[in-house]
Image (cartoon, rainbow, N blue to C red; front, side, top):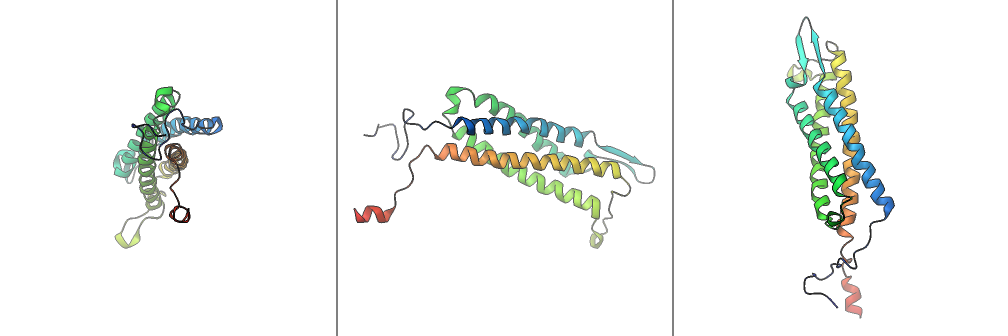
Length: 188
């Protein structure tokens, strides 16, 4: 018998399946690993600067895409820390949608940030001769190597958020019964 406050197919809080502890442990580890990786990405990018007597100074403020990467990294680190803390608060754990939506949004933001930063690193290394952009890494090797490391860390954060979005989707959608097979209903 269904309670009036419950939609059809939805499981009540008394019937709510428990998230396996191993899944919760993986979730917590991924969220905690995002914090130092994001902070390291921010630090490597913001502290990255190099001077060249022929071409002048190059720092992250010179490239708009790196500012975006730093901003997304900061949001990810703050969210990961707050969501780790709130994932252990009983009243919030039952609200699977509180984790699902931000995890999805941050996974998409991370994807755009990694794509933009990858293109920047590629252009710094190879240039684009048809539009007369010369490569920069021969003149600023230290800047390029630090930026490549920051991009590598940023990619790890992306993968963590991709896994987190799958885990949070499992948590959110496991609250509902699977859809009925129309053929099974017609045969009965």
